[in-house]
Image (cartoon, rainbow, N blue to C red; front, top):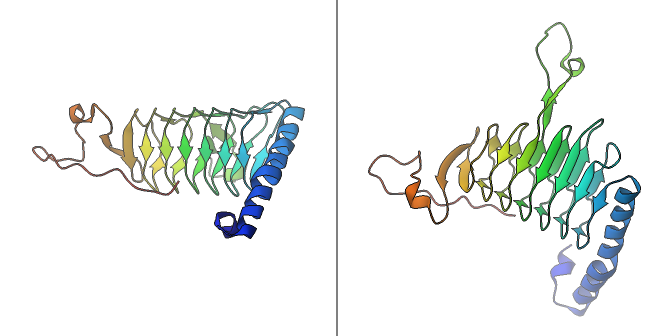
Length: 222
């Protein structure tokens, strides 16, 4: 879709058609689909081509105002009781997949970059005499706090809370809670520092005693 970024007359016409005609029609279609099955997509959403919103059962997806959901992103609830609740002003990057068997909540103004996987369920594997696929599922809710930034290619697993304003570096795999305003990286995730006004009072566990050098926040495309 590079023509959408062009400055030519053709580019301007294409942008007008895409953003003023195609995008509102796509939003209206998804609003109709969700509301007809008890869900909700609030006003101001921008849904790019290839996005998928799949309600596994009625009323299981509720989305606030001004969602921005890029190409080929998917949100999906699984029956009988999966719930996805998305606040206002949330950004979901290209190719990201969010699946709820229990509950996934994403609070206002969170930024979720491209190609992340957020899934609140996995398979039980205890009995070697039975195939894993027949041993059932284990699910626990996930919550992503207000203003958090999930960069790219991260995996967030069941039962995790990502704190308000927390940052996950690219490729982070999260299996436990991340504190408010923490910058976490790695597999499994580890906190390298707390950002913001009070960070001087919160030394990084990755910094040696007497060493004031602190790592810079990880960079990743949104």
